[in-house]
Amino acid sequence: MKKCAVCNVILVRKPREGIKRFNNRKVCSLKCRQKYIVKKKLEKFVPAICKNCGIEIHCTDKSGRRSSKRKFCSEKCNREYNRGKNHYSWKGGLKKHGEYLQRLVGKEHPFSDMHGYIMEHRYVVEEWLKKNEPNSQYLSFVVSKSGKIYRCLIPTAKVHHKNNIKDDNRIENLAVVGSQKEHFHYNYCPHCPHCNKSGELLENPKKDNQQPS
Image (cartoon, rainbow, N blue to C red):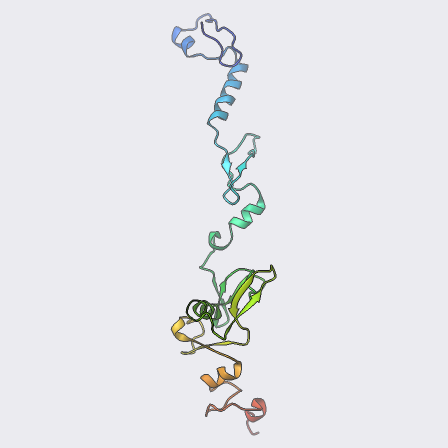
């Protein structure tokens, strides 16, 4: 004896209903047929998982039906996921800053700007010193705003580009000096107001470099 798959009512063959159609019929009425279709869809439905936090997304589309096409549970997760390397305009975390390059390291770094960038030549030297010369005098422990302790390049240390190409940040092209005065003395620039063509530092650069009228 055949029963309805929804309400368990005994199915009776209708007039002019073929045997094959009766054998394939699983419900007793249109109302039960709609419930049966919804039940089947729910059984096959796979809930969407948020890419950022990993929880199930219980959402509906414009028609009010459950949707599995959403990727995030909220706008907050959407913003957190689509930043950095996942952003559509990601260019490796580098950007131009005048003649120099800046690298994205995050706002946790003690010497980063409000967007999380620091000068790349300082970052390259800092990472090289931490790996090869951890006891260097140019490194110091700094506490960030969140309370974490970082080992960073001291602010008074200057990084010199040997070939005077400001965006060439290979470690072979970089040299660290203790102060700005040593930086000028290391390799003076003829266009710099702090030194003359002989490379000697001037006590009053603005006065000494004034041309006679």
